[in-house]
Image 1: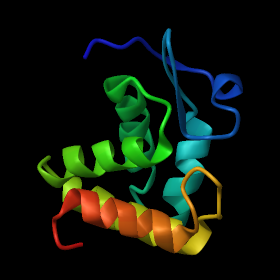
Image 2 (image 1 turned 180 degrees about the vertical axis):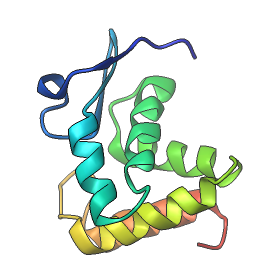
Image 3 (image 1 turned 90 degrees about the vertical axis):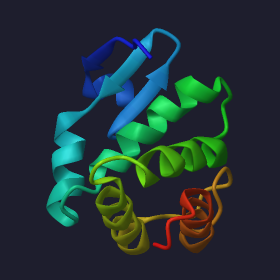
Image 4 (image 1 turned 135 degrees about the vertical axis):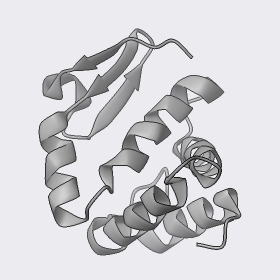
Length: 116
């Protein structure tokens, strides 16, 4: 997937990354903050935004699932999944599109099917 990537924290609206039809926007400052909380946790957030572009649907659950599946077979992917789970356990919030932190983590675990 050839996607233009731009560092622009204003575009991400406070998130690590945000997928838009014209590309992927990253906020290195937000990624650094998350990684200071849990090392390497920000990687999942970037991959899941690629998922939104790949699935061509605006579904947070499907994007999480796509990211989990991609990372399950990638080098260091299980590490990134574990780190994100630790981060979401400690810092996640309930959102209508993904449920409670426990529900979101359960979805990611089920989608990766990697025993994490």
